[in-house]
Image 1 (cartoon, rainbow, N blue to C red):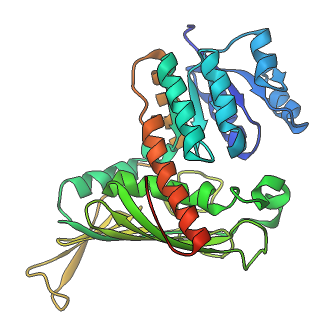
Image 2 (cartoon, one colour):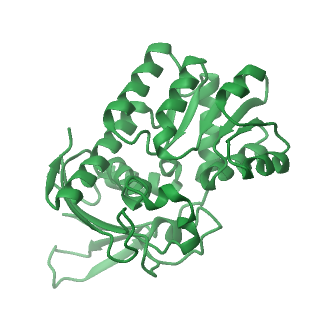
Image 3 (cartoon, rainbow, N blue to C red):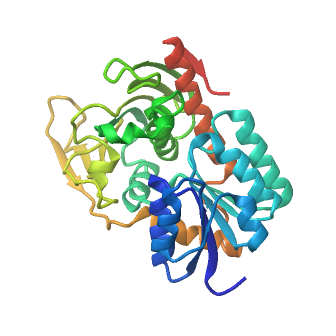
Length: 345
């Protein structure tokens, strides 16, 4: 293994180009190849100064990198991941790990059996404000967490849906966006055992949902509400509140509210609210704020991936962890389809 890790990126779409940009900027990496059969991928590869290959087999026939980032449409994560495992290549797979639990488990078990490191792209775990929020919750300054309210409201422009799979089942905000919220809430508040949900496609009339809501029950007994939509003009989403990605305009709003018996917390503003004296809804309540540094979480995830490849770190979000998030998200999708409740397995 060379001083600069040779990393291939499979998939030159929206998120793939984000990974390519960060690999080319990171002094510890070399962009070894861009792999994607689409016509625009040759231009992406040329701009980044890396070889282009139409598929993984063609790349492996030419030479083998040190590691692979899989940033393809959801349905191809598992087959491409299995190819990487068979070739002994450490891999970072974008979320969701898979479209269904059984195929995701097959990939996880194959990687474990082969001893191949598998990191899943829940990059928000690297966010400094999220880590600080977890530290506040774990300190028990908020007391016992009773309720959580999470919003992911934004408007995806019409040309976003020029890519056909984004208009089809599996390409909507449940598996693309709500899965991030589920992972955030699992990280902050613990495991989720039961969900109730509903969804709608009334705004765009595509076969896939454009909005969904879920009520989740945490193992601790806390309750949470999650609301996601890609069809409203609003500032209340991770993308527009955290400022982690400069492509999104930053607002001064929050996307998560976390309520405990001793205090409450907003995220990502990290406003803490506590009663001055006795706890009562008519007693004075005061706000304090923790300031955290902003960080490019995809870049932080890449640096972590390099340490995983070198054997210096275990994956922050490994396959088994990602399966738990996928399980809950699929339970939301099932419940939303049935307009009822579903239990995480």
